[in-house]
Length: 339
Figure 1 (spheres, rainbow, N blue to C red):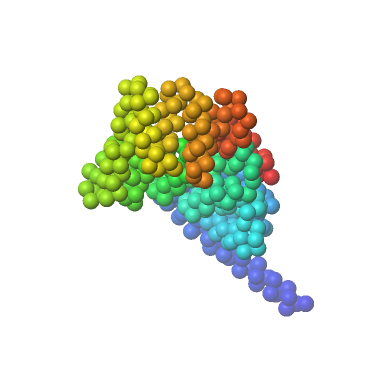
Figure 2: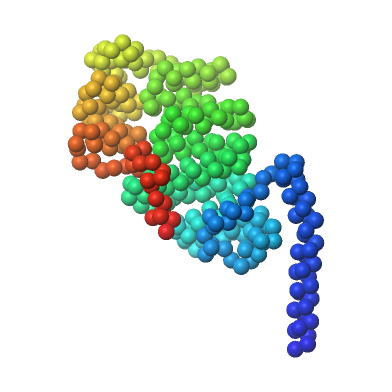
């Protein structure tokens, strides 16, 4: 009995010594962050954003003791455990991920994985368009918050731009965030992604401008050169007629190309855009529907089908990006997504 009490005493003394000994280290870290501006600490008030059930007693002790990075690592280990247990797609996993980003906002991987988890993993777990819209909105918000803490991390900008490009078919916003990487070291394909987004939108003049930009940066960029030649040969003549107000002539030219490649996504997008500009919404609806049927991943076409379907009084199923554009984030309560 006496031996057990002695062991407990030794353990207690050791714990107290570790905590006391860490005070100078914590003060030095605080000085480096606040005075030298090396890294900013997460405000303690952010604790209210935690899901209490995601935190163990040890983690809470680490947080209160000033070891938030240690607690974040423990939380991320818990994420891995949930995945190993087959619970990775549960909302509990999302709570743990989000808590990790709050504990250590300068750790890049949790921001990327948390956003990906919402925009891709949880997204496919439901067919509810509104819930999908909420998940997309939260994924975008998480990446923007991550960027606010880490404005020098090019990977977060690329992740945000890609989410706009791939999941929201918002090519204007995608281009904005891709362009934000141009003053930082970035992969060469980023410049082409801007051009490709405008090509799909479609905005042929802007697409050409950016492909030309790629060629000025690298005259040996074969992809950009090929894209430029294709646009000038296939799409630009019809676009010029569109700009001149000759809608019938523009449709006739683009239809010549579509006779050769009936499933050409860019050609179908341009055709639908011309018809919208001409006010021929019924035909535009049919062309967007044709594009959506031709390509399973053509989310832009599906959104346009949903939006034009509402205008035309058709019975069409809503899609997440259409809901997201119609409702402000304040109207989209996250309660169901974070239950």
